[in-house]
Structure formats: structure tokens, C-alpha cells
Length: 94
Image (tube, rainbow, N blue to C red; front, top):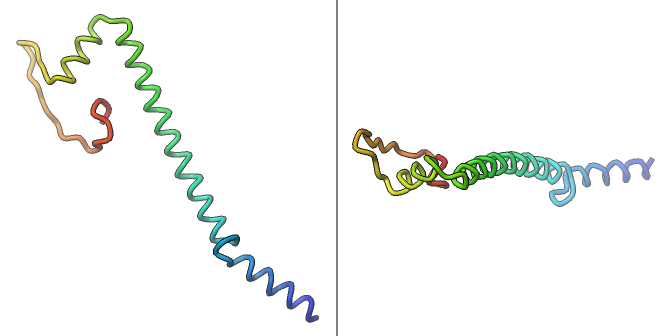
């Protein structure tokens, strides 16, 4: 009976131990979820950047558009609208 109580106490301690118990497992699971979401976001950004790089390599209007966007230039028949960005992490992809 004493052995069973000691085993039960050890299991309860291990379950709630902050370094190796349930809490640690839940924290690691949350970190994994956050890392996977960040990874997906970065992959989407990489894909967009690759598409833009391919368009720029082909030349033509994409180069002109990129230069005008970067420098804030407009053609004579255009109107420039500056909208506030919600995310300041990337100047090209808000």
C-alpha cells in the first residue's frame, strides 16, 4: 500500500513539475504551433518575393513599377495615394 502511494505521489509530482510535466508539454506544444504559423507566413512571403524577383528578371513593366513604387514616382496621368501600413515589417508587402 505504501509503495502504491509513493508511486502515485511521484506521478503527481512528475505531472505538475514545471521543468518536465504537463505545463512544460503544453508550453512546448504552443511554441510548436507558433513556430509552424510563423514558418507558413515566411513561406508565403518567400513565394511572393520569388514571384516578384522572377517578374523583375523578365523586365518590362515590372521593373518600372518597382522603381516607381520604391521612389514614390507617378506618371503624368496617375494619382499617388499613400495608405498607412498596418505592419511595418516589409515596405513592399504590407
